[in-house]
Image 1 (cartoon, rainbow, N blue to C red):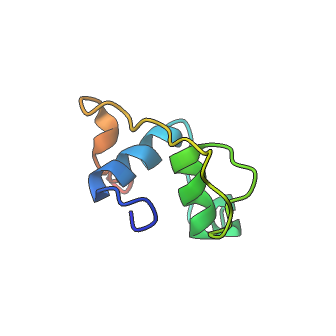
Image 2: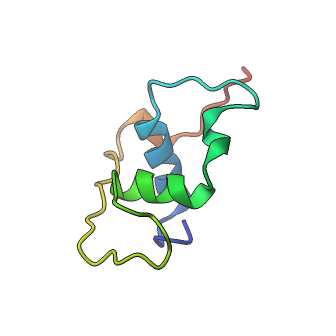
Image 3: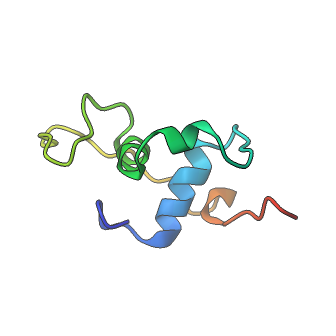
Length: 80
């Protein structure tokens, strides 16, 4: 949200959409093996050559957010 100036709902939608086919177990999991910035850049831009905050992102193009009418814009409670 902070890196790209997007609202919370959009950040949730991007995560839900990109990882829609995955299931996560309690720690340890592979998500914890990368810094949050890594996942933020990847979810926002897709595959990028280097996600460092100082990288030249002038030619990177952000992925479209999922359409507003899809279920990805909702926080899912996996404990239910």
